[in-house]
Image (cartoon, rainbow, N blue to C red; front, side, top):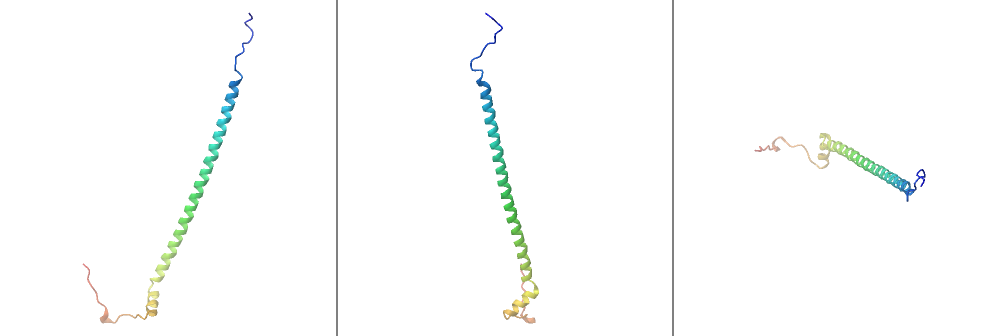
Length: 101
């Protein structure tokens, strides 16, 4: 027998094909994970922006309401409203003070 001849293995050609298929499958899975994570990041960013806009709107409304309250409680406005309702300032003997304990 000639010992210098290469020995052929059975099924040796399928090993690299299996590794190639596993490599491609892992690349596809990693690509899908990357796309999914980017979609989740964009969704989270959109939600954060919506909440920030809602917060700004509420803060603006609160500031406007505080200004309106201060305007309505101003002495000038109270005198004007009292005059519209027929009220007048009390006479010296009409004021009663009560102590609270």
